[in-house]
Image 1 (tube, one colour):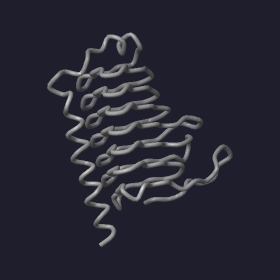
Image 2 (cartoon, helix red, strand yellow):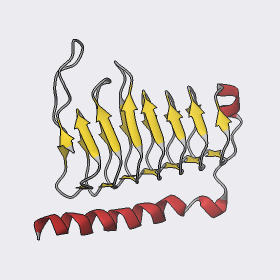
Image 3 (cartoon, one colour):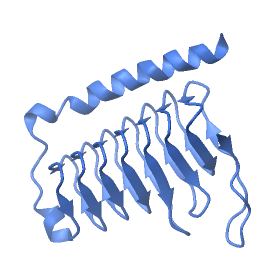
Length: 184
C-alpha cells in the first residue's frame, strides 16, 4: 500500500514521494511524508510509516528488505543516507539518522540513535539512544544502550568492509528489474 497518512491534531496529511526508478513490493506499506530516492528496493512486508512522526527520507540506492519496520515518534524524523542496507526484519524507530553506506543486520533494532557512515550493525543487535561513530562495528546480538559502550566500539572488521557494497549492488539490480516489470 502506498498512501497518505491521516490528518491529526499535530500532523497534516501527506503522500509519499517515490522516484520512478525505485520499486515498492505490492505487500509493502509506504505511508505519509516519506521520500524514497533513486534505485531503492522496498521488499515484501516492509512498513515505512510516517503517520506519527515527521518525515522519513531514504537516500539513493538504499534497500529496505523483507519485513523491515521504519517508524518515528511524534516530532521526530528518520533520515537514512545513500547506499544503506536495512536487512530482513530490522526495526528503525526514530528519531534516527543512519549515515551513508551503513549496514543494519537481520532483526537488528536501531532506536533514537545516530549511526555514522559505513557503520555495521550486526544481526539481532540493538542500538538505543546513542551515537555510533563512522566505520564502527556492533557485533551480532550485542546491546548498545550507553554512550560509553558506543564510544568503545571497534572498527568494522576487514572481512566485512565490502559486504554492504555487495548487498547494495544486488538490491539496486532488483530495483531496476522490478521497476522495468511495472512498465510491461
